[in-house]
Amino acid sequence: MASLQEQFESALVTVTLPHSGQALTETEIVHSCLVSEDFAKFTLVLPEDSPLRGVLPAQIEQAILPLGVIKRVIVDIVSERPDDSEENVPPQAAPQRPVQQPKRTAYLQNYDAVIAVASGKGGVGKSTVSINLALALQQQGLTVGLFDADIYGPSLPIMTGLRAQKPEVFQNKLKPIEAHGVHTMSIGNLVDEDSAMIWRGPMVHQAIEQMLRDTAWPGGDVLVLDLPPGTGDAQLTLSQLCEITGAVIVSTPQDVALLDATKAVSMFGKVDIPILGIVENMSVFVCPKCGTATPIFSEHGAKQTSQKLGVPFLGAIPIELAVRQGGDAGTPVMSQGLDSPATQAFHAIAENVVNSLETLG
Image (cartoon, rainbow, N blue to C red; front, top):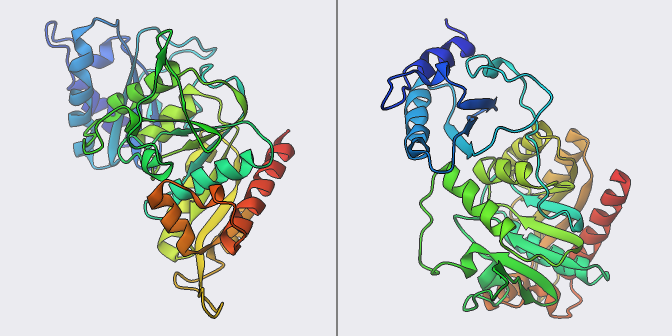
């Protein structure tokens, strides 16, 4: 059976330049290829005005996906060849190399720490955790920003009460919108609420980079990145575009969510981003009348997984009606001044995140 290297080489030979008929592998257009468990990310070097920018991504995808060895192809296009100390490696040899951390740029350098909040799957309450964690950090006296990087499903405008607001423009820069004392930015504040983002990897990359580049982030102590679920385009893009200090993984206690959370931990490890810890969301339901705790989605699963993976366990957040109601109403539970099991959990998680950051130095 042909090796992965041989399969990629044979597939890429079939990708030719439209006018010359030259094989892509015979050019210096492909700068690198990073391969993970289920995706391959190609970085191409092409001038800004090159018509090949609109042609090659689809051709590469059509050549690689039928091999059946990966689930998705990501094509990133840059105008200048990245300056690195290693020799350029031909694309056909790249699959044998370990996944390496992309060269990072200087976005968000005016924040002391950049925290990515991620999950391996959707529906675990990642955005709820992101928003309330940002508020809990702000209530500790920190200056906090919150960037909604979920291009496909931005929920920040709704959950912060900003769904009708558009950012102001000052000196060709977008001004973050302040919500509950936190500076925020989301693509949901830039497009119509009902618009669906049907974008491939390169467009996701460009959208995220444009929002980072064209937003006048004021800087401060912490910026929280609310990532989309999964381990794909947005996560790779942000690991390349900014220096992420560490990641917080959100999961429910059930096995299917924990399996995907484990994959998220693995993905961040492959791009050299430390794990600050795991949060167990929706740990138990506490009856508001009798106080009985019921583990609807099982319990202690995230804590056990964190011990297994050797990463900190940041805390468990119970199911609480006020959390859901606050998110729907645009008044997150941490903005309401409540003293409840959920708000106590968010305060404790924020303290543990700060401790993890201090441990990293």
